[in-house]
Length: 103
Image 1 (cartoon, rainbow, N blue to C red):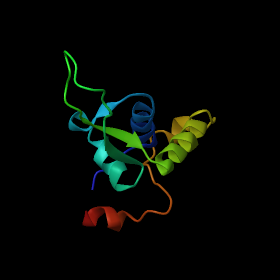
Image 2 (cartoon, helix red, strand yellow):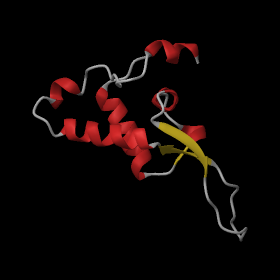
Image 3 (cartoon, rainbow, N blue to C red):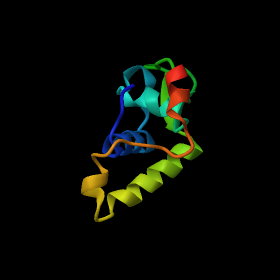
């Protein structure tokens, strides 16, 4: 199974937190974070059809748990030991890796 660093996870969570990311164009880390319950997919809200109207797309959004992890990793980023933590493999508490491998 692929592992990701704390820095890669933080950047992915940050990207979803501040931008609308179409699910069809997501980095490889996104499905991993979705399996962990940190993000989900929702249909983008649109207004009534108008000239130049584009069909709605599925976008990635953070779950409550994802926002909590984003906040935790953001705090860690400001810590003195971030240079060591950022390259360490990301491990989320309360989720078994075996559960991910079954999906």
